[in-house]
Length: 475
Image 1 (cartoon, helix red, strand yellow):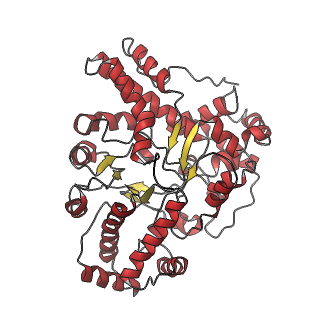
Image 2 (cartoon, one colour; image 1 turned 90 degrees about the vertical axis):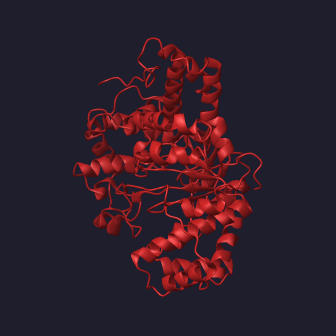
């Protein structure tokens, strides 16, 4: 059996002159509370605080980083027990699914998934051997036994990880009943929601017209008319704010925005309602609604997050059988300069509006995103996201954006994950990478070490807390 050992200086610069500086910076921020302002963990975990079912259900089933790699090597999603779109799932022994992961563990060499799970195995469960076909059952049993104890229930882990606030993401059609249960439970952990309106914004979203009907029923607004549709959003946003939301989240295919006149917007909406919208009309509608969302954010204070540039559900077969978020969302080229101009012409200089931009197209870092955020007061840069949520991706982000946008036009780190136990692992990686980058600046005499320490603390804790208005926002 190969031992599992986490080197204390992992991911810190190798250069002898730089590493001690990085180590000092990291030690100063390693134990700061975790701010997790955007993610996709399940709020029912914290509402019911029931024990997690088993290692597979906790670590493999929610983590599309893991099963997309397995699929790429011919493993069927049904063999892993991944839930299907119709709510069923193959009858799979979770131990057998775990053994499949262990049999293919070598595939994850060099990937962030390997470093995240190694951290979870060692730091959360105290496992001292590397996962492998030979150790699969030992690791499974070690984790399974601990999951049955009170110390490994969701709220206990939340507290153990030092999470100060965690945001989940829900659609406007969600009842938010689990968030209500959390608030009424007496537990002091702060779990909030975020407003993700895609199901009632994207005419190409499955069930869009039925979603609009439900949207109207929930809000009491007439969503067959443009004015009622906008009023329904305002109504639902207020409901989310009462449940703790401080932000919205928009997962559009592109960053395109529009600023249509009232009549033109109304006619476009009527075309969408009739089912007559072309792909170009659907794109224009999404673009207009982004601008409407910015207007609403000026009124209610919610921070906007724009996550464009993903060709979602690229595999038709996987989407039809298993639904969304099954590892087949693929990055695509994304324009920001022209796409955001209509919104920025109208609201770009408004001090009360805050928009956080993300990208899956790294070519835009220095050419588009950093110059935009370095000029418009409404814009901040979100961290490396998804396929770039990795050591090298984080380094490239800092190298390509800092000289133009600086550190303070970014928002630190957010983990954007469904895999709860990976949250502290991901934040640890981000803190190590940022401290390494800052140490290089110190050694090259671009920053004094005391300045680098201030920046390290800001990136790890202060900037995400401020950017997402997590102090003083009316809840």
